[in-house]
Figure (tube, rainbow, N blue to C red):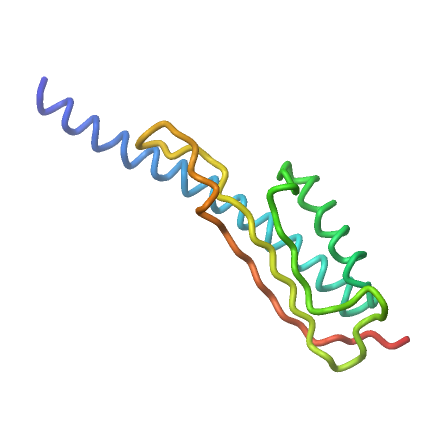
Length: 125
């Protein structure tokens, strides 16, 4: 019986680790997709910072992410579109909002996930 409990506890720890990694991977995948969509908009269509930020927030909302907890920064401006040949950088930072299975408590908001990507603008007005 004692051997069973030791092995069972080990298997449960491994199982819940995989569940936590699944949630983290899902969140990061949603963030990468949103950044890619924002970069595509900024590089090809020439969106302003606000347009790109709103597009990224909409994309994150569709995947079930609470966008109020995320910060989105970009290298553009609201007064003009990024000129052809300039680099555009977009970064999203947000909390790892899932349960720490070892303690049963939510992970603190100080633990964050960040996705940053850069692309060269191909926008021709």
